[in-house]
Length: 230
Ligand code: 5RP
Image (tube, rainbow, N blue to C red; front, side):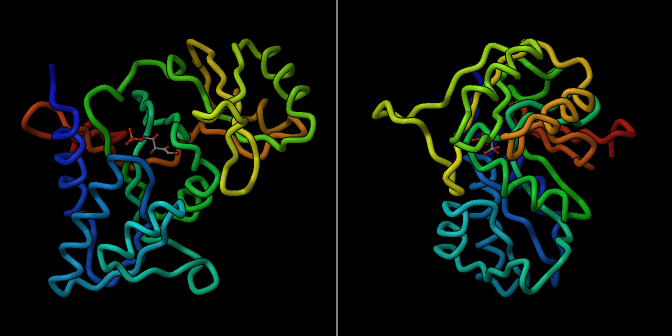
């Protein structure tokens, strides 16, 4: 059985070489991105100068604990490089994200980023997206109507619940619908269809945003790019 924690750490470590002094760095969310934040914090404590833009409250707490200076979009309008995790990555580097519920901020940061790097363990690459349920953030009012429309697009839809059986609330006090499509052969088309549904705030398909993926596999890393290697 592979050591997935080690693969996550290797992937995060592999992304560090793309971060240069003086950059504004988007800090992703989830357990793999957390390795990156800790490793970047080590560099910062040794005098490396960058500023971070966190994609979640949890990441901002972690970044502060590790001494990373933070900034935000009142100070910057672009991000040089972001390192984030993903739930699935297809061969065209399209993603499903949002397993942790931070997809809205993650997408805001990703779309403001010049170079989005995804770090992940060896379970995340897939031929076709869709086995992982696609998270869709929706306004609480009328979520049932939105769920019906997404069912009409071919998904089995579940309202995400907390461990105490309450509807999960995002940082922006919205709900998440976890939508199992099984296969998403045309992510761009589905992205457009979801965007047209009133009540959808954002969804976890990240289409055409990623430049490079670092996969931890066994004792090493693999780099995926659209050109097929680096
Ligand atoms: C959070 C995310 C995460 O990046 C994604 O769920 C991957 O997490 P992990 O690295 O823990 O597997 O999109 O919203």
